[in-house]
Length: 210
Image 1 (cartoon, rainbow, N blue to C red):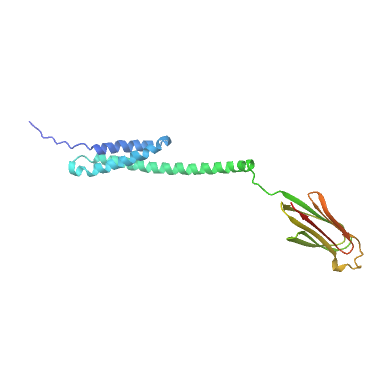
Image 2: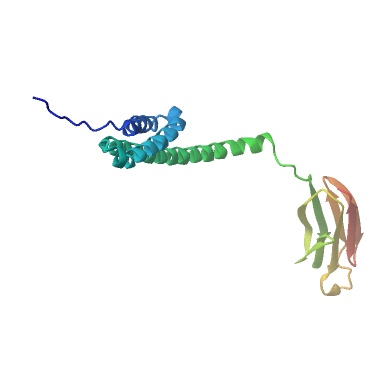
């Protein structure tokens, strides 16, 4: 007896899609082979989709192509998830390295700053006086009562400066300015650059090149 057995053609593209999709899915989780996984799953998905469409004309079994498409799509999703996770981890590592490296870099290469100088303003008085002192562009005022010595220190950066210190008896001096001698002085970086004395008020000024 003769039996007519009809066998459906094999779906080669579906088989290729399964192989490529499976390989890409495996490689997606291997960091050193992640670059290979992307083309494998993309080509596998393309072959599988073609294998699903072509059986309409060739009557080939499309179940293999469907399985290949599912594997390739899963591999593509795995590649995306792993890439995002690796990128986030890399950003955190780089940020941590930058924070750790920053202070060392600053210590190794400190920023250039202007040299700091120190000016000391001193006043000796036995009567109440109004004091005005500082840089010519940054004057400060204060009133002090009878005291043996008043002292104030300020810092300034390198560059030309005009320093002044003046003192006048409060209310013009109740005893005609003869309540005692007033002495002013300005010292820059340990060197006294000007000193003046008077009973009626004093004014000290010094030009500093820095």
